[in-house]
Length: 249
Picture 1 (tube, one colour):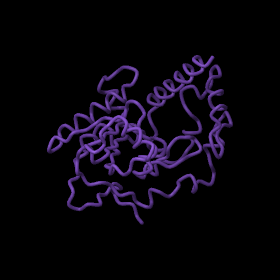
Picture 2 (spheres, helix red, strand yellow):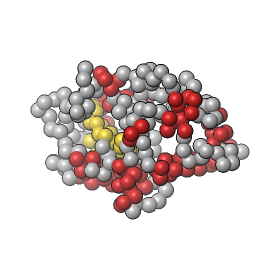
Picture 3 (cartoon, one colour):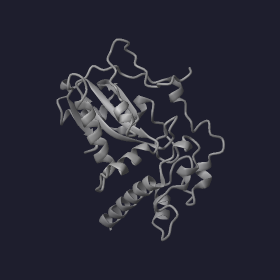
Picture 4 (cartoon, helix red, strand yellow):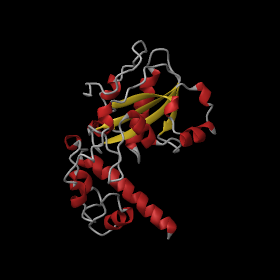
């Protein structure tokens, strides 16, 4: 099957499709509308303990592919520890409020982890497993990120997952450059997380603010995040590692 220009083609021809172009313009260029049945059992159980699920009909998942979101965040002047989260949430909440019929939405992410983002990504055709312990999108590679998940009371067209989106990109990779590029030798059939962390914590480690293995992956390489975004993200993850180790000391 050949993937169409819009891989999120609607399956209900008469159902309304919202205009996502305002989100596209700020780099929130991946969006999928899923039925409530797309929730995995564990997420549904966690949500049911906090939310009256019968009030909601669909799940809206918004993500970014490529560097444009970071550029929009920087241009907006949004600061703080989590500028991407703040910018993305404000953008999606504002966009939803402007839709016809004033639909209601309940923000699930960012926030307390009650839904499995990777499970939703698999349902959308976005997530494939990789040796880097990062999800790989078949087009954007590892250069995409989940930004907002909401329950909505909408009746929008849901999205079809095309067969081409499910074929493993890693299985078609003969040279495995991510494995050979890792200076810590932490990447193989799976990631040796302890070895990766130990190498990142070394003084003057080249992996402090970037990941050579991730940069070596050819999938979506043309959509690589800007250096500033990579530095921001890896600095945050390293700070979290140090807090965790200090708490466990």
